[in-house]
Figure (cartoon, rainbow, N blue to C red):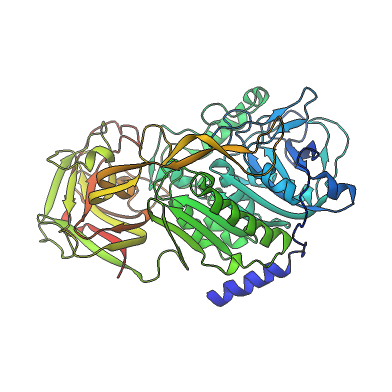
Length: 589
């Protein structure tokens, strides 16, 4: 595999035009600012016109005046008007004539003076674009790929959303890098699966890759999450009206039964990773409750292109707010490597940068960690053990949908979950990879859910990523630092951050959920027979966590997790066959 990756890396590098490293700094104040509406091949809003995406461009004027072309950094987002981007929720701004004046985030401030163009694209139906969002489906990824085509002279764009004069991107070298966080990262990953020519690299920050796992969990539908247009409303007023029929059709195709179907298959990016041609730089927090870390692990293991990862023990945070100087330096070298052809060695450095404790980072060659092997544990009367309990061992609890995993893991007696702890560990134990649970249980009702939590029981200081403010393990300060050049309408100075920590006596390190009626297949659930035990196996969330010596590993088995699912209607009594229930954890050493 290593030889294959080296060969692919060399092939990718050979395909990149060798643009010289920029020796001069270009004027940000004098940069060209303009908008082009890129025409798509569909009319999803059914207004009789092909849909168009608004692409706001900022590019250095000096190369244009000399007839030189520049590479492109691009982000496509639904958030530019409604919610903003980054820690300060920045939105796009325009002058009275509609000319873009404010570009969110630091990429324009930092990279335009270094000879890059920055193109910020409004997702279909948002801000100044027409059309409708396809929730990461084929129309969304094709729309993003069409912008890449325009930047390579293979698609049309105009000066207006309707009519207008043609606009060419003759200033572009055709080498495009797409970045994005969360929804934007989701789109970046999806566009990569098209294999569109000209897309050289993707920098995805906590981006979805398998949306089924966001809205379902092994057959259990998260009914409180309905992806109509997001919170708050992402659509512009026009799209809110015109896209209702398309949204209703998406709802029908998505379903509400947790079944894996063609709708979800279309949005399964790891299943299409063999089509990816661009290099990939991904960042993920293992404690991210907005975009689960499984989106990273499935994608990472499916990719067969040059790749790099930053992994940390926190939540939904941009690495710009974790290690600002280190990240900006790294992402600049990454873009220079893949968009300019600069042989700076970034692709030969250790592929993984990982944080195991607050601000304690290390570099490694691979993820999961080398040497990680599956280790099996059984729950039983004596706790969590590496030896199975007697064949007759069983335990019963009452599902209570009014509580969830954060309540389950608290020590003490409870009739609403089962809790098993190991003996204190004799040495530090690293868990690296994706664990798996096999649970055998019966339910007193036709519908039952099972929730799993793996817990590190013992005192520790961790990033404060499980908090009501959703800061993900950082604290925003009042001071600012500047990254690049700014203007009166677009500051290059951003609020500084620091690590936010908290002291705990336990930490949930992996989770998993399922609908027991989908024990045989995720394609169709079935009602449960209250006299029968069912066995179901499923992956837990990926982790990379060091359990210190003296701590205990805990397995908690619950029912309906209040924090994830709606009440199933009836509250079942669940009986677990402990001898046929196992927890497998990827363990180093």
